[in-house]
Length: 430
Ligand SMILES: *Cc1c(COP(=O)(O)O)cnc(C)c1O
Image (cartoon, rainbow, N blue to C red):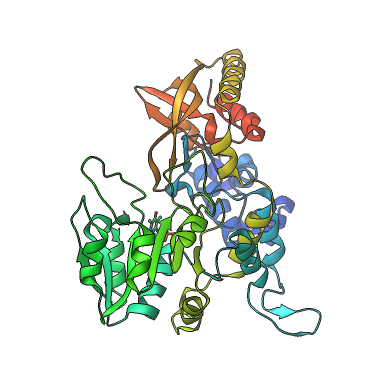
């Protein structure tokens, strides 16, 4: 008897197979070759028949040439840092696709001359916050703070409250970020109480600026005091307000979240914020404030190292001018409507044989924003064993495990994705 392994098709024969040849043109030969070799190895190990190698390789091809895979966020955490924070709106995704090729990011098609980089996105940001004299955009909020420290406080002091020496996450701390720019921190007040007099006592000729950091991922309660921006604005030095989440205007749903318009009106010289938290856009650092200061930031040599790419500019402009982004839609979703969706999905899944029930749930803003704010929500509750299978599915689904059940929280799932979610769960039911 001949060894069945001798019937395993050769690599070049497989690469010439029409579907695999087409995939090689679309995804690149390396990925297709890897899928082919993996399938041949499975046949050699006796896991699949030699006749099935081509089919297996086609089935194992990735959908794109990037290893990043789409994930349905059913965690109930609206801005989930590990899932890439804000998902972009369809309009922003279209804008990214359009800008992905050659684009007029720094070119005036009318005159054929060089033009201001990202002027559309900057104009949209300026229009969204009329109180800002000027605006600038960098890689993220950390970059915005770094640029402030470099341009306004290198070799000088940044006056900051001991209650606002915040660790952002993954071991990164704002005070260390600022010191890495060559600024000295002048800490004032205590963990729970810092007054305007504390700042006044520290401000002097060495001061580069006073920094107010919104403690976005924790809450200090009880015997507390902090100085308002209006009081700090009277100290005669620039006041930089890191508001964190990127709300441009007050949000009645999140009354304790600071916003750029209010901070500027209160007297902040500069506001820094993230683009991919509550604003619902791409990763970016927004800088808004006094034209003279923004110009100093823009012209600092390091600004070039912190600038954003055309894809970010495209997505940011489309987020600012376009339809309601997914983050906003998730925050605004009506709990009753979420409950109805959960009931419907659970009923359909029971028909498909799953042990699924609709339950009330508590969602969170996340992304280091609005700590302590709970959003009424609804979820489909499944046995815990679904969690892993759903994560490994295609599309991957991330739920959360609570008291031995896998919850799929619908606040963070767009209604248009209910069908995808149902099909993903049904595939894990057998
Ligand atoms: C999230 C956050 C940051 C960091 O923002 P990135 O855009 O992730 O760099 C800084 N400060 C505050 C107050 C934040 O909430």
